Amino acid sequence: MMQDNCGSVSVTEAGQARLCPLQAALVTRPSVESYDDFGRVTLSLFRFIAAAYATGASDCWEAAYRFADEAPGIADSPLLVARVAALVRILRSGRPCQLCFMPPSCRRLSKDEAELMRLLAVARGSQAGELESAVCQFVGNENETVTTRAVNALAVC
Image (cartoon, rainbow, N blue to C red):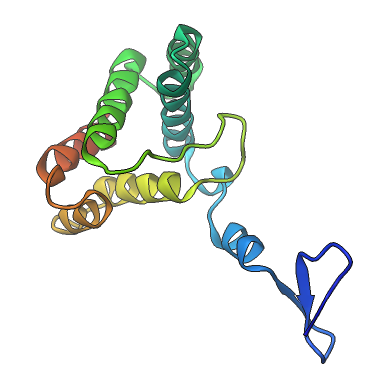
């Protein structure tokens, strides 16, 4: 196996290119465009709120509320922001490591964001017992009940 000049793509002896592990992981992760309007709005709110916690800047909170106010199809934007913030707070308190969020303008999703969007999709679906199992895998048993309630509340917002 050989590497090209930049070292990011390996080439087999047969001349077929293979992606490096990081590129392969990025290709398999969903992008923002793969979600419906509600999912995209919610993902942006996750990112604004995460930025607010990371920087301590109140502008990030204002951006979250403004973004939700301007999003089409959102009947109660302050409630949506509050439910996203509640879920972020629950997750921050119950995990041994920090959640990883991308900047609001990024088209790709981090592993944590992809998992949160999966939880939201499960909650919005009709599989009754599947959400508890998915939440338990993501947060463990400590905050399973409160996290499940928060995801369900967000899903019906």
